[in-house]
Length: 384
Image 1 (cartoon, one colour):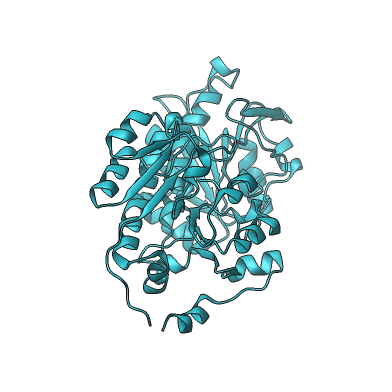
Image 2 (image 1 turned 30 degrees about the horizontal axis):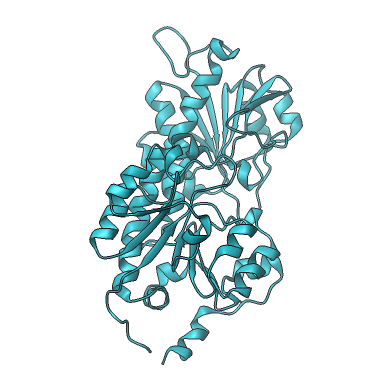
C-alpha cells in the first residue's frame, strides 16, 4: 500500500450557506486560526459567518483570505460546508477534489450523486463520520443542541404572550407539574428530558427499543416513566400531555409516523407538538414543514412546531460545536498526507465516504437510489 506522504498543507474553502434557514457555518474564526497556524490555507466567502455572528474581519484576523467570489471558494481542494451543495454549487467544484458536507439521504436525489460522480468528487457525509468508539459526533452534537432547545421553545408557546395555555413549563409549590411526553429515547430525548426535569416537569418517554429506554434512565439518573410504543398506552398519555416532542430518528433514511391524526385530535386544546424529526418525515401524521419566520400552526386545536434544523436557532453554538469536530479531522488529514490516505488509514473516517473516483461507495445509498455500489476496500489494490 502506498505510504502516507507525511504532513501536507491543505487548501480549505468555506462557502456561505445558501440553503433556506441555514444560519450555521462550518468553522469559527478560532478554528481557522489554528489551521492557518499549522500551515494550511483557508478561504472564506464573504459574510459566510454573519448569521452566526462571526464577521469577515474576525476570519481575516485569524488568517483566512476573504473571497467575494463564490466560484473561487469552490475551487479549493477541500470544500467544507454544512448543507449539501446545490446543483449550481456542484458545477463550481473542481474535478477530483473533496466535498465534506451533510448528505441528508432522505432529501437527496440520483441526479445529485451522478453530478458528483461525473466530477469524480470524493464526497464525505458529516453525519456518517464516526469517532473512534463508533459514535456519530456531528449527529450527537446537533442532537444535544436540539434536545436542549425544544424545552425553551415549548415554554415560549405555552406562554399567554403567544396565545398559549398560559402555563409554566415545570412545576411550583402547590401547582401540578406540566406533563411532557417524549417519543424516542436517543440523544435529543435525553437532553430534552434533562431540561424538562430541571424545571420540575413530569415526563414520559416512549421508544420501541428497550435498551434505549434503559440507557436514558441510566443517563438521567432517575426512575422516570418509560414505555414501549403501544397504541392504548400512547393514546392515554397523549390525552393528558401538555407538550409532546417527536424525536424518533429515521431508520434507513425513512421516517416513522407513530401518532395518527385521530390521536392528535384527542389531545388537549393548545397543547404543543414539537416534531424534531420533521426533516426526516416526522413522527406525527399532522406534521408539515414550517420555517423559523413562521414556525407554528394549529391542527385540531393543537399547536404544531415543525421547523427543521432546530440547531440553526442557536447558530453560534452549533458552529462552535462543528468547529470542534471538524478541526481535529482536518489536522489529521494533513498529517496523513491526503484525503485518500486519511480514508484508507482510518475506518471511522471511511464510514463517511459515499462517492469516490466516480463510484458510489455507501451500500445504503446505493440500495436506496438503485445505483451500483463499489466497496471502498476494492480500491486498496490501486494504491500499491
